[in-house]
Image 1 (tube, rainbow, N blue to C red):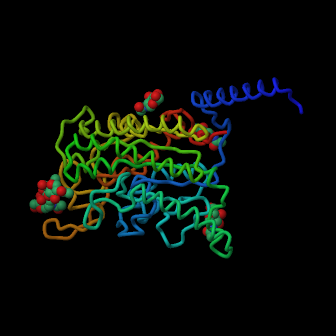
Image 2 (cartoon, protein in one colour):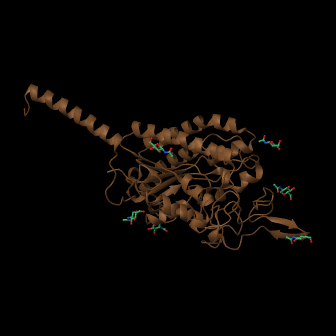
Image 3 (cartoon, protein in one colour):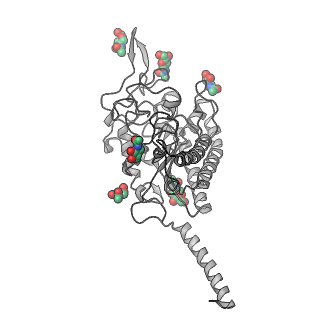
Length: 386
Ligand SMILES: *[C@@H]1O[C@H](CO)[C@@H](O)[C@H](O)[C@H]1NC(C)=O
Ligand SMILES: *[C@@H]1O[C@H](CO)[C@@H](O)[C@H](O)[C@H]1NC(C)=O
Ligand SMILES: *[C@@H]1O[C@H](CO)[C@@H](O)[C@H](O)[C@H]1NC(C)=O
Ligand SMILES: *[C@@H]1O[C@H](CO)[C@@H](O)[C@H](O)[C@H]1NC(C)=O
Ligand SMILES: *[C@@H]1O[C@H](CO)[C@@H](O)[C@H](O)[C@H]1NC(C)=O
Ligand SMILES: *[C@@H]1O[C@H](CO)[C@@H](O)[C@H](O)[C@H]1NC(C)=O
C-alpha cells in the first residue's frame, strides 16, 4: 500500500476539498478555451430568426423577392439574404446549415438545423394553417434532435451513400448548440388576444419550458450552449401596425419591449441556474436585444435608415399590412402588383415587417461574435469549455 490509513484519509479529505474547490472556482469562473475552439458540428434550435428551410419544406416557401440579396432566390429563409446563424456557421468555416425537415439534397455531416419559422417554446395556442404558430415548438424540435441523434448513427453504421451525410458520434459532445427562440411566445400571445399582463404572467412558464429542453439536450451530451435572448419586438412593424401603444424615443412600442425585457431577465436567471446545475457545460447568454435595439435608437451611426419601416411591404405608416405581405400579389388601382422590395435593402433594418435584413443580421453577428454582448464575455470562437 502506498498510503498508511492516516495519509489515505488525509488524501481523501484533501481530494474532496480539491474537487469542491475546483467546482466552486468553475462556477465563479468557468474555464473556457484559450484558443479557437474546433466545433465539428453545429445544432440550432429556434424560430424564423434562424430557420434555414424548415417551414418552407414543411409548408409553403416564401416568394421572391425573399432571398434576392445573397442567394438570388428564396432560399428557405425569411429575409432578403443570410441570417445570424448563417454568419455564425460561416465564421466557424462550416457550410450553411441544412434544415432537419428538408428532405431534398440535405447534408448533415456538420450538424442540423431544427429551427422553424413561427415556432414557440411552449405548445402554441393555434397551429397553421388554421392558426398562426408553427407545429414545431421547442419540445418537438428536441424530439426531432433525439431522433436525429439515434438515426444518424444507424445510418452511419449501415454505410453506403447516406453514411457520409451524417455527423460522427463524437461530434455531438463537441458541437456548438445555438438557440434563438421566444419571440413568438410573446408575439403569438398578443395576436391571440392575451393582454400584456397575461403575456407577462406566462413568461416564467415559458422560460421553465426552455430550461427543461436545454436539460434534455444536455442529457444527450451537449456541452456548449450559445443562447440568444429575444429582440425588441416592440420595434417591429407587425407589432407597431397591429397594436397602437406608447412609443419610446426610438419610436418603438414601449410596453411590448418591456415584455421582451422581462422575458430576457427571466431567461438570464434560468441560465445562471443552469450553470450552477451543470458546471461542466458552457452556457453563454447573448444579449441580442441590445444590439438590435441600437439599430433603432441610432440607425445613422451604424449606417442604416428608416429602421421602423418594412423594406418589403405595402401600406400604412410602417409599410406593413397583414393582408399584403412581402412577395404576395395584391390589386392596386385595378391592376395586380407583387409586393416588392425597397431600393436599398443594404441600408435597411427591417425586411418584411417581422424579420431583419441581411445587412442588419450581419451587423448583429459582427457585434455578438466578439463576446462584447455575452455573459460570460467570451467570443463565439472560444466559447467551448476546456
Ligand atoms: C457534405 O458536407 C461536407 C462538409 O461541408 C462536405 O465535405 C461534403 O462534400 C458534403 N457532401 C456532399 C455529398 O455534398
Ligand atoms: C382576437 O380578436 C380579434 C378581434 O376581436 C378577432 O378577430 C380574432 O379572431 C381574435 N383572435 C383569437 C385567436 O381569438
Ligand atoms: C445576467 O446576469 C448576470 C449575472 O448576474 C449579470 O451580470 C448580467 O448583467 C445579466 N444580464 C442581463 C441582460 O440581465
Ligand atoms: C390593410 O389592408 C386592408 C385591405 O386593403 C385595409 O382594409 C386595412 O385597413 C389595412 N390595414 C392597415 C393597418 O393599414
Ligand atoms: C392609384 O391611383 C391614385 C389615384 O389616381 C394615385 O394617386 C396613386 O398613386 C395610385 N397608386 C399606385 C400604387 O399606382
Ligand atoms: C475569434 O474571434 C475573434 C473576435 O470575433 C476574432 O478577432 C479572431 O480573429 C477569431 N479567431 C480565429 C482563430 O478565428
